[in-house]
Length: 265
Image (cartoon, rainbow, N blue to C red; front, side, top):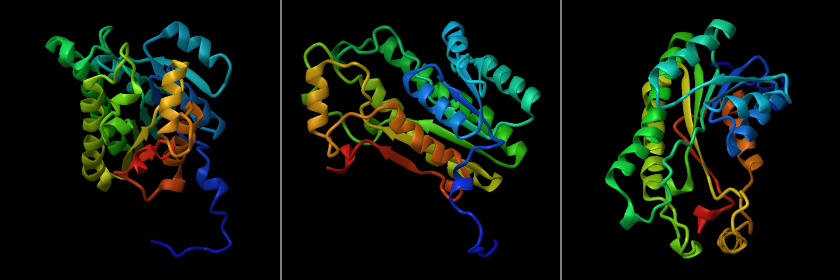
């Protein structure tokens, strides 16, 4: 432990991701794209890890610091190949963001209509997919003697949905709450398990993110949020950069609410 040098530059450099190799799973998704771009703008070299090759290659063409790499988080072989390929190219992985969002076509069924097989499949793809990614990348970071895992969770892993903001044609899937609540607890477990190896693990819980939802939903949601609006993908990118950077070097096991104050009521 060293004493603070009052002449050193504490702020700009600590927020930089220069010389860091970052992987964003689900990097072609709404939030994944914003985090990938944010990391690149903070000078990280970013691997956009996604199953969608066409969308992935189209996305990375616009930024030389972005590179698409194939990843299917429900396939352990695919995860191993992804990690091994990046290590072969770069020699390390500093930051791994779990942002993939796999789900079934009947994902939005109301609770009373959920089929048990669908329930199991969604938990297996999403929660267990994060487990597989975390297990493999954490062991790689352990070998490196350091690294940083960021899990994208949700406010609905912390508080119950307010069903009054949903109309009769939509709902918040029950499995979503179970998955995100599990990710939050899992994040804390990993933080305490791998802390001694220099591996930090945190989670970001976004509130509702605007994605061309119905105007009535946006209005209802915004009215219940202290800041009076839904979030944007950019709102999540900033906190992700912070957690990925050395500015947050003493933060691990934290569940960060990025929700416009939704959970503060």
